[in-house]
Length: 317
Image (cartoon, rainbow, N blue to C red; front, side, top):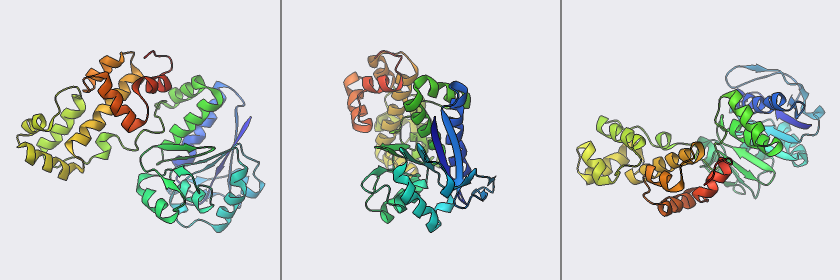
């Protein structure tokens, strides 16, 4: 039995609480008695979330049991936290076997000194502030979650579900995490080093229809010729004008956009199909397995075969 203690406070983001909670609670349907989930606020009183939802905790933080997993959510209430909450975290945080934050909950851990000397992440919109206010923390704005020793921090809102699934997989195994993910109708294998934005979200949508059509074409045809010259013809622009207009309207060069789309496509094929590495590399526009390997090592820190072993264990590379 592992105790999961979730901290509540006024202005908490409700999904930061309920997302991970549902994951841990889902373990009960797979293997009863795996987790004891408790919620607590500073004084034991009810709190109002940032969306207005009222949450009633199990009790006060001072009376809360020692936690195997101490989870600190984010929300607007992290902007001016109660000093008593920070003091409690400073005292009790190091005693938890596993310390977890969701979204801007990383700011509360940092304020308590619990992220000093560690690598961490938070919601993309708050990474700059976290790095500025806490220079002893190495803030990585890209991944959806970061695990540094027994401290794990996740990005915005739903990434807390991904992190919770990873923790359940660590505790109970892949089958348990997969069962819970299926029950919640979410993807199991969104790895921590996945960017907070897909290519389509990271780039702005172009204003002009020819450029929007090019964006759609790239996403739907990653294996085609996606050189600037070829894409410029599709947009009916000169290569120079196309490259300049694409970057101005999307905030990303055509090459960078193509690189992201191809990487995402290759990852999906490695995770969801039994296609061979060479077949995946061709379908994703890399041409050769070696070209795809270089892209994976550069952007993900692991080769395609290793990536597949980690995120599709039943498959063979």
